[in-house]
Image (cartoon, rainbow, N blue to C red; front, side, top):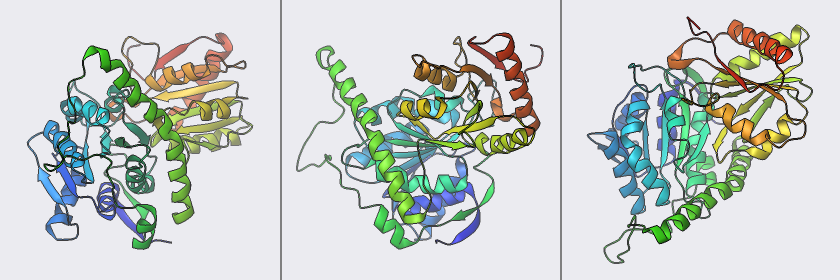
Length: 393
């Protein structure tokens, strides 16, 4: 067992980056991720981490520096939120297409406007299709573990793709939780030194990120998509190895009291732990309810969702982002797609809630459950969604 410390989740994330022995940190402050890079600057300044800390002038530059560092064979880290992600968006896509295994923490925050610094999943959903591996963390321990996991997967010779760790802004970033640190020997056993396949070097000139004419572009994009899909087996293997070393086993989805449940909540991020308490209360009232928490966002775990929901009559999908002009939230849309051809397709109700950090309490989730059951009773099989708690609707 590693040492357990009560620590702000952002600071523990920075400590995990230190344990990963990164070579380059490109940083620009934006709420609510700032504490991560501030603590990393302290670790570098105090000599606890031998790395280049580069305070850039914008998020666009932060991702550009990360791309350049990774291209020459360095282990690179950055993080951002919301509008910062929008500014680095151009380079986010380039990093994925160049197969550079950068790891980034995205402290999830709503996108302007109106201006908001609080949490929802609008930012990550804006880059759902950017080509990065993407995972969600439910709590501080998962954040810590997935920094090391991130490099393990991203730098795998069969993957070589960048990876995003999504953590809920404020709900996780600024909260103190008990975190079990890994021992140095565990890190060394789990995470080998970075061995890049191709690097920029003046003695061996190569072209990276060149122009793709129309007659090669489609092939290049398919060649980018296939490794992302195939990375799933490496991801699962890395979770298994992590569990064997530190005793915490992760999977693409996590279930709670779902085996015999007629109705399942489906969540992403920190809401899952709140909803697990709701499940317990509803079970005490005699309701057949369970929970599925999505951890792996891309590549999407189609098979795992089909297996987990195969015998379920009703799904209540909780989204924290709007797919403007669409039929529900992004998570609900993907799950409907995953279950479209299933013989025993469940009734699906979708609730969009918690935008910009609005509280969604245990009582709210219980109310959502009862609303969903009423909808299913009146209009079964209707592809419906609701903005929960919105005044004036």
